Length: 304
Length: 288
Image 1 (cartoon, rainbow over the protein chains, first blue to last red):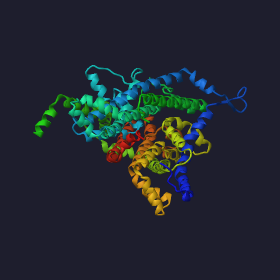
Image 2 (cartoon, rainbow over the protein chains, first blue to last red; image 1 turned 90 degrees about the vertical axis):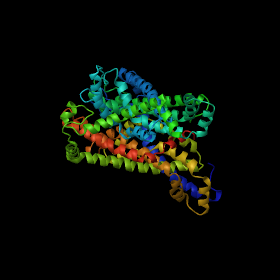
Image 3 (cartoon, one colour; image 1 turned 45 degrees about the horizontal axis):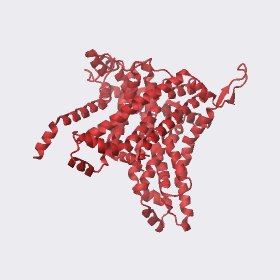
Image 4 (cartoon, rainbow over the protein chains, first blue to last red; image 1 turned 135 degrees about the horizontal axis):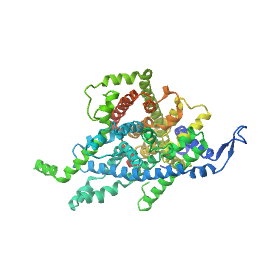
């Protein structure tokens, strides 16, 4: 951690430090920082056509007008609410499923644990677009064996109806990422020293009490990591509704904030408003992540 | 004695419940994959008229595959090739850049070190969708949109990789080794390139694989950047075909077979490389 370079040779390590650091920092500045600054700047300008629209349109500084416009647009506000609802469904569903699967495979009672571990992980390799195309076929009665079987026993479900469509999308994300998150949690479980279990068993602890008093507290940092990553993942909601849109009327062109921003930028030709929308989503992400992290860090041991 | 004990454990109701749930979950994760593999053997008509989880009487897997690879002048193989280039080159460069940066942050003391690391870590928390739109307008002003570079260059940046590399350099590259190599007259870059990277190999592989999958699965970035179908990755190509199903139902079969092939490709890659995928690094990182 401390500086390694003895004074005499200080110059050489400094040059090396720059050589190691600069390539990433330059790329990071160009493709991460610059777009964010650009979005911030763009979000405070607007293109106005002068008078009767005869003169050349000019770019004027409008300060927070685009934000006010976005937040007073009922469709955009609705999409923000929908995104929050989606996060509220998806995050607990994901964390509980991944944790449940990890604890099951770690319980020592499951046969073929290694096999199932790889099997659950496999959907992580299927791109979100392809996963959505596949589930899309499983969501329409004409091609879905599941819906056909349910139909056979008298249960009629339309996963793509207005009431169900958020759950249908949550299911696609769960399918793709539960196994990946499970692997992160399983390696945290693997790292628990077995002496702890032996001691607990000698004390007569039940399987449940081992889970509750040993496993869960010790994998807590990994659970927090999975929660934050899932939260950020849900805010990106874009591909699934975009691909499912032709299949249902329940998904509008402003279904999620990202779709709305994409729509503003490319269909409506208003990149300034789109930039404001993108910034709002980013702020939401920061507020959520830091809010959640400070919440869990306040209760005793720091996780991050 | 041992077998007897095992037997009673196997028959315990809790064991049965555990295994029932494990198998149920397996059915859930396999369902779409099994469906698409079976659907890929059907004709467009049979796709809608036969039961999804069983083969039709006249399977035509070969015909579907031939059509998949010949449609639009072999567009599908071109898209697969593009995906491999974007993901392979992007992930390789990302691995080099972020491991060098993470190593430097771990092993050198310099002003603003923690501030720099915090900013990079903040990058992990920015949704990729937030970057893509402004990046399009930015690259548009320098005329880079529409080219391979518009997708490749942003894919070479992995803040998460820097994070992993720093944590791993801290824990697996001892200061004494660097010091000894310096006394032997090795330059700092050579120490990084030959000694440190070898010690950090598990982290490097993880960074590569993580970035490879991230680029392969990225949809929004190529969607906004590319307009020539010949430079599309496979995800974009499949949705292009999917948008044509209204015009010609034959495209349903192309989308299904294409999805099957691209899903199989990456699932096979994931499963075969799973043991190199050191998720414990990700988990251990939280303790840093």
